[in-house]
Image (cartoon, rainbow, N blue to C red; front, side):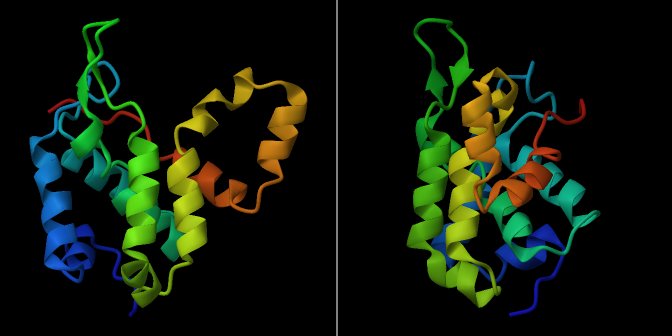
Length: 160
């Protein structure tokens, strides 16, 4: 299946359960100090659209669609801070990539690559805090270049 660089055209090709899960991200809020754009669906579309302007890489674009899908089951008030948090959402998102690997493959994507981007899309924000040998090991991973490109688009957005 050819990659269409429009978010809605892509998810319309997804199985209905996956498409509905993505669309329901509209009902999942986020911390406005990190995501002034608001809900997770708006953020997901924003990241996808930023990437669609600069790459045709199927793995990166599919990673954008899947990257925060796990927030629907992990978002809660953190009892220590009293603020919204989605701890572990990247693990849920990565497991959903594996569960829906046929979807990834239908678009010509590499399931392992998309999975690794999902699993590490929060870790890359800590790269500068890692010890040098850990930084080097992380940078040497086969998915790092794609993760790095992805991460340049995965940040807070615009105020509504």
